[in-house]
Image (cartoon, rainbow, N blue to C red; front, side):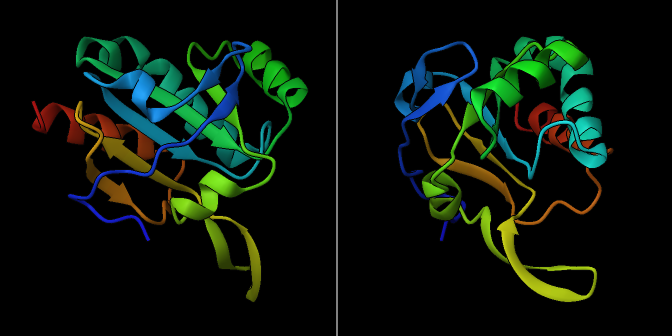
Length: 155
């Protein structure tokens, strides 16, 4: 399980820009990785648009945002186009990264336990160490604001 203060496990996932991305590619920057269940769904869209609307501020804090879901590149491309998302979305169809980061597992949906993507967010420092881990995000629409407040306080 991912813990604050630990070095994050590396990953290698295809991004919406056509390149393979890994954590080591972002050394020297603060990295916000948010895990979400599915492109073009109401909660996921609100969360993505919140990060979109604060993208310039995130960049000014020497940070980058990466979104991760198990969706295909085709789905990511449509999501990016439909909502003018300025950041990279990564595809994890085998759920390997999500499992390593605690973003896939048992959760409750409609009162029943199911396995699925757990909406969560991790912030890594420029050295790749986990600074903050929201293990379960309950309010997708306001969560980007929580991340921004955290980033501003970490400066």
